[in-house]
Length: 178
Image (cartoon, rainbow, N blue to C red; front, top):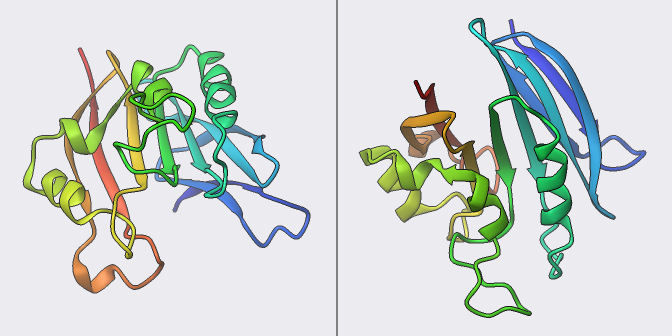
C-alpha cells in the first residue's frame, strides 16, 4: 500500500511529476516551475513528525536561472523538514551562464545538502561515479535540508534494473538529525 500524489505538466496529463510514499500523504499541491514543467510538494506523516517532499523535473532547455529562485521561495514557505528530489537536468558542477564560477545548484545547496556527496558509502560513490543519466553524468538528486536530516546511505539501483528509463533510479536513506 502506497500513498500517491501527482501533478501533470499540461492538460494532456500524459507527463508530470509524482510522489509515492509508504507513509500517508496528508496533502499535496503542484506549482508551475517553468512554462514547460510543474513540480509537486507533499506533506507526509512519517509517524514521528511530518515532512515536506518536493519532486521536480526541470526543463532541460531552460538556460536561464528563473525556475530555481522560484522553487526555493516556494519551499521556504514551509516550516517542515524538507526533502527535494528530482531531475534537475544539470550536473553537480554545472556553471551559471551569466555568472561563470557560480554553480547552477548554488541556491539549492545554500539550504540543502546533496545526499550522494554526504552519505560516505560505497553506494553513494557509485552514484557519483556512474551518474543517473544513461548518456553519462548525474542529473537526478535527493537533496535533504541541512540541520534536519543526515544521509545514512545513497546509491543507484543494480544494473539489472537500469533499463526502465533513460535515467538510472537513485535513492537515499535519511534519518532525522537530533
